[in-house]
Image 1 (cartoon, rainbow, N blue to C red):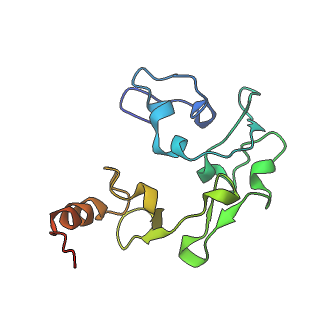
Image 2 (image 1 turned 120 degrees about the vertical axis):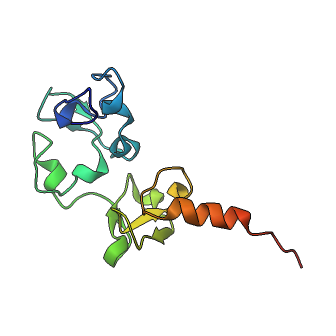
Image 3 (image 1 turned 90 degrees about the vertical axis):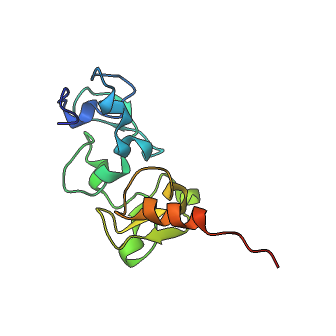
Length: 134
């Protein structure tokens, strides 16, 4: 279930087709980070990029099982190890002490989405600190 008013199959998400009236199938957070290489999805037979969160998750999403193969670009080590769109998309990470994620990219910090459980508080506090120039 994506929202109180919409429930679609996961392969109908992130496909540039608005199946939900509230567009939650296309505006979901997982749609913001997808593969640069498309695959033929098991539902719909369309060749499309897939969300990075679907890679190597134990569920075959591509007809040929390519999403479960060890061929996708990664960055980081340990808790920051993750799949990325391509090898040029590696960045520094903000390590999360709370929330659902172990880390987020610096480009996702202070984006208004509470991924780490405390990042908006940290951002608010850092904005309130007066800048000192020497």
